[in-house]
Image 1: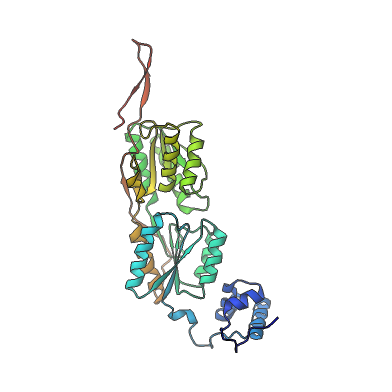
Image 2 (image 1 turned 135 degrees about the horizontal axis):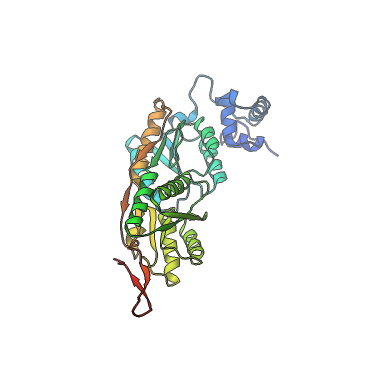
Length: 354
């Protein structure tokens, strides 16, 4: 088997070293950029292999090669989710205005796939914006030690974070249901690894306790249209009068599933989502949802990570919180109450569905 040498037409990269050594590219990068952060035995083996195959790191005192790439990595949990279209556009415009380009990576709702992609991007980009990570906090901190990073939709005190005001959004949704006469609500949960999902249900549960709104959770389900369809089948066993879904995609799938089974929305079930993606305004009935300023979030995250690249220091503290707005549309209505007519002895339905 021929070895790759420095005389080859293609320069040897850290990926070649990583494959030969059986380690992640980020480990090779740390071996040369931050030697103290890699086990001594592993570091020695990597250096030996690198020398054998002809890899040459940057000379001591010179900045690593990524320092002038003018590239930023944008990681999203699911590129097919329309939530990320406006977020990406805001990030892209802010990056271009600052002379940077974005590399978009898709985790496909997998924490391991997300980590692998980030490890491969570490040697290439100057900084990261991570949208709705499915990795653990410790894994995010590991990447943040290698490149400047801003995290979206998760609050971390030691890494710059940008989140929406989930608690206020949940309270507004619950208040609307209470005003419409609903006494209970089912929360349809998204991914267990989602920080926002946990915050939303806890806020709903606590607010329900304080206001007398009974809350129940089902799930987790995939945060997709198909996940919403699965949730609809689960709800048919005991149909609630009101549902709050983790996101709009799930809410749309849930409504579709219920409508196909003859359930009337909002006459029988009121549905509320999160995000305000385009389809929530196009479907019938239109979807009541908690709208997030996604384009502004993307731009803010990019501007913050560029500031870090240029030497700004992150002050440990709370995340930046972006305001939300409840958009009331056609999927929510006054709860219908059944009552018995004394004169006729029949069951009648009262309450407006407008």
